[in-house]
Amino acid sequence: MKLKKILLGVFVALSALIAGSSAILPVNNSMTGLSLGASMPRMKSHMSDLTDLAPEKGMNRFTLVHFWAAYDNASRAENIVWKHFFNATLSDKIGYRAISLDTNQEVFEGTLALDHMDLSNQMWINPNDREEVLDLFGLKQSFHTYLIDDHGIVRAVDPTPDQLNYFYLN
Image 1 (cartoon, rainbow, N blue to C red):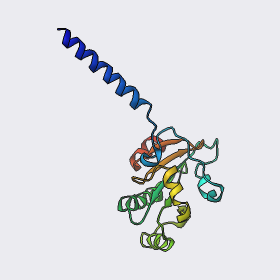
Image 2 (image 1 turned 120 degrees about the vertical axis):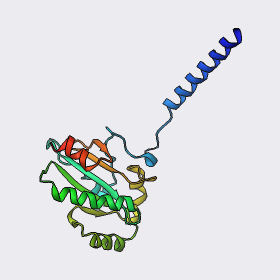
Image 3 (image 1 turned 90 degrees about the horizontal axis):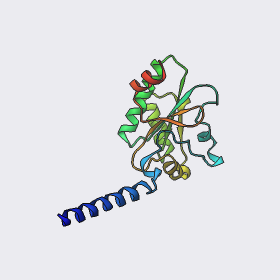
């Protein structure tokens, strides 16, 4: 009976220790991505195109920021899905910005031509800035899509077109 209580006490103590230590471990956003409620990262001044991703404050608008690359089939296919979604959406409540992380600008431009993409909402990151963008936006393991509000806060991570329709366009 005494042995059971001792073992139970040791188990409870170890559980508390494990739970407590895992609660304070830092999260590496460069691997996992930004989370809901996170602020958009600050960029270096020479990447001014990325500092203006959020809509103007007080406009009650959103910007969908989609990171993709030609070599990543899933993110490239999502870029096409978002193109069709925004072509069919009449609302101006959500803007769209697609950011390519291809290392070769010719590959980026050729992919846009093949996929018949609207160039006005597409952007290519200079290879010198690529690592910083991968780190700041948590894109090391996989690419993500972020819905950003007019305060620069992440309101959705990897939303679907149906989710945008339901939660933000109705």
